[in-house]
Amino acid sequence: MKKFAEEAFKVFWIPVIMAVVSYIFFTLKDITLGIIVLVALSAAYTLIRLYVSYKKWWLLIILMVVLIASVGAYIFKAPTVSLTINGEKITTAVTNIGGGTVLVNPVPLNGLYTKGAVVTLTATAGQGRDWKSWVGTTNDNTNPTTVKMTGAMQIRVNFDSRYSLIINNSMVIGSFMSFVEGDIAINPPPDSDGKYTSGTTVSLSVRTNTGYDWISWTGTSSDATNPTTVVMIGGNKNVNINFEGRFSLLIDDHLIIGSNINLPQGSVNIDPAPGPDDKYAYGTKITLTASPEIGYGWKSWTGTGNDSINPAVITINSEKHVEVNFEERYLVMVNNQVLNKSNIGLTGGTVSVVPAPGEDSRFTKNSLATFSAAPSAGYRFDSWSGDIADKAPSVSIMMDRNKSITALFIRIFNLTASAIEGGTVSPTQGVYDTGSSITLTATPEPGYRFSQWTGDATGTSPSIPVSFDADKAIIAKFIKTYLLSVAISPAEGGTVTPGSGTYDTGAFLTLTAIPATGYDFSGWGGDVSGNVTSANVTMDKNTSVIAIFTLTPVSDNTTTP
Picture 1 (cartoon, rainbow, N blue to C red):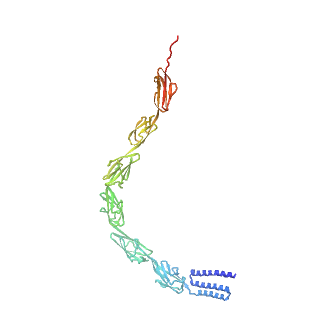
Picture 2 (picture 1 turned 90 degrees about the horizontal axis):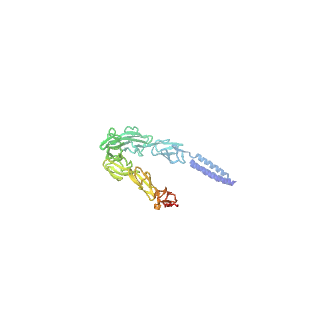
Picture 3 (picture 1 turned 90 degrees about the vertical axis):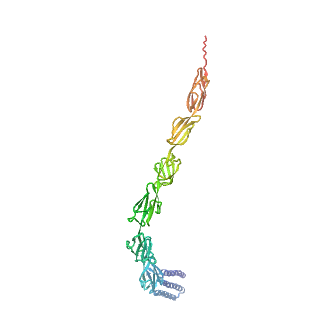
């Protein structure tokens, strides 16, 4: 049991010592107290273990003396106090304070000073700030200053803000600023960091350059006066100076004094018009719109900065001299319609042109324009007439005057002719102009005969005229025929009706045998049989028939007495 108690004491006591001493060193930051506690607890640990081992009562007396001495050392050590600046407890040589830093000398030990110590404080202002004063030091109006630590001291350091002056988006860094329109004198100029101490009054005076007038300030104490002032309070100051330059505009050497100018080949609209002094303020944007007279077109500007656009926009920043260029231009009439774009639709087709006419529907003088005709479905291009005569679908014309051309498209129709079995048709197909006429002919094959026309034609004649006012689909019908051959035996024995001939397939015939005088009908032969004088035949093949006759027997008229 004794052994266990010793081991438990050894295991727990050392961690307790380390924990307590660490807390004092690193949390309370009291080195003196930490050393006293470390010495006292270590001595106690050693004396207790010796007492347990040797049971000497004087070891307990030594333990008590050590504990009492430790407590006394802590109680009677020199008193310490803290230093706080702007609410921040000083623990290091340099402390960041809002607006700057403070250097302390000497550095506090564990964040504490011995009571009565004298500490030197040096303030350094941050960017855009100035040191102003101390509160609670030996001399609040000097920097560096000192503090006597008569107790826990609460010190305050005051920094002043510093501000920039910005004129027309440029920061003032000296006593003079120059712009295109004029110059500004600044008094006083900013300090070397380009800033002013809060509360500084700055005088601004402007001198304009030739061609400009001072109009006003924006953001000063009195924007309508020159010179004016700016008080540097509350932040950076943004000031604008407003100039006005006034300049003349000339078009083709004519001074612009209104909203419109008339020229021999056209006119120009000016928006806005100049002021009462016939001048424009600097920076004014002016829209110039050229309108050519009939027979002319706008070609270009000179001096606008973008001379290929109408209307043109110019910005007045000096005296402006602009020229407008017109040119002769010509119209083209296609089938009595003005061609105002790259193509035009007509009855029967489309006519396109390269290059296309301008926005005024006209072509530049002496330009070469190529016209192409494209027929619609059901039409064909025939020819050009008017100021050009040609059969080619694409022609070129020199634009040296107004032109009138006509594109002729002709309506066309399709022929489709076919034959039912038994013959042919000529022609079988083709494309024909409206109003044209052809002859359609049906030709039967051997063993057939032409019957009739059907579809877009009628009739039984094998040759018919066809006129084209629409697409035509025509069919020729043929009928199969068979040959009937009738023979008489003997030839003088009689006759048969009907006789030999060609008959349509399926024809039903009744053959009648008529004996000659002195003969009697005897019977049929060939493809017909029987001895009746009338026989029926259906023509579904070539048929051969023989009518057989015999002599009529002579009667014996002798009378026997």
